[in-house]
Image 1 (tube, rainbow, N blue to C red):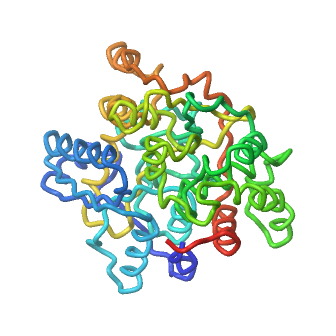
Image 2: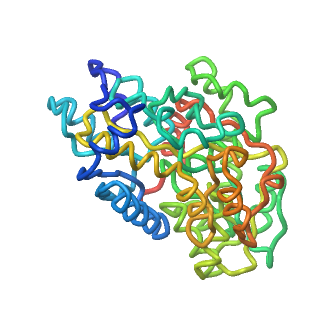
Amino acid sequence: MRSLALLAALAATPALAQTDPSDWDAVAATAQGQTVYWNAWGGSTTTNDFIAWVGERVAEDYGVTLEHVKLTDTADAVTRVLSEKQAGTDTDGAIDLIWINGANFAAMKDADLLFGPYAEQLPNWQYVDVDGKTVQTDFTVPTDGYESPWAMAQVVFDYDSADMEPLGSMQDILAWSQANPGRFTYPQPPDFLGATFLKQVLVDLLDDASVLSEPATDDNYEQVTAPLWDYLDALTPTLWREGRAYPPTGTAMFPLIADGELDLSISFSPGAASAAIANNELPDTVRTFVLDKGTIGNASFVAIPYNSGSTEGAMVVANFLMSPEAQVRAQNPDVLGYGTVLDMEALSDEQRAAFDALDLGIATLSPAALGAVQAEPHPSWMTRIADDWAQRYGVAQ
């Protein structure tokens, strides 16, 4: 988050298209031969392999070269764009595409540091489920066409069914952890999944979580978040290593389950456990559950910085990510197990059949079993909560 506070001070720079996004033939022709540097999380072998496959396909179909710049923190990419802006590098920047959402997107959008609008003019937007999925807002912030969706995520809890049963609320998880100390943990904030766990606790504890849809203020922050800190004060001593250490990322928790150190963890992909079982990274007794009130869900997006020198190539990649071909591959638990952003009713019979033929895996809940999707809080809540967590419970890595 270190770069976000600086963005508001920047003078706005319009991010104008070099080629009209609605003229797809011109976009594709100009994209030929371009190299797209996609800054995306690099902490998962399966995700990295999927991005490599995307690169192969856009090279075959469009002559676009895709380079995956592996990130541990999206804020690093934001910092790079910010530094280029301050240095006056308003063309041919180092980053052409960012896997982004939440506070990073909101800050870059507010500072006019994003190219577009483009997303809703891409050919494959016709397949996107704009009515049933949160693909036009990002943590309550309207996307306005400045980012395009490519995956759906929802919080699930991964558990070893050989050792425990599903739990229905955060209070149930606290009681279970108190009775089974050391068998549960979550990633250390500001890791995205770790921060999401904190938000999930708060959403589940509040009688009315609608207050979180508006920006946090000095007047309401302390009162609204008080239940979260009371909960964590009780939970922390019962965690793995008594809360004195935390896994750095979500992917670091699956080996702890596989090694018998944990019985319970958290994921932001309903298919992650099935994918890990398919890859022999988890025992086949692992299953997933959601809370009775539902769990937080959102979309993963890509956005194009205002100073990209390969905007057409970046649009080609963004469009391919929304294609039925890419979406069905991403949903396959042998590949990623991500939720699709597409509307099945908008697909052809052949395209829909490819989704219907997928075996989503033994640990993946059906869409009906996933239940209600809780809205993401406004980005300002995550920023303040993550900072406060670091002061209260943070440990050196």
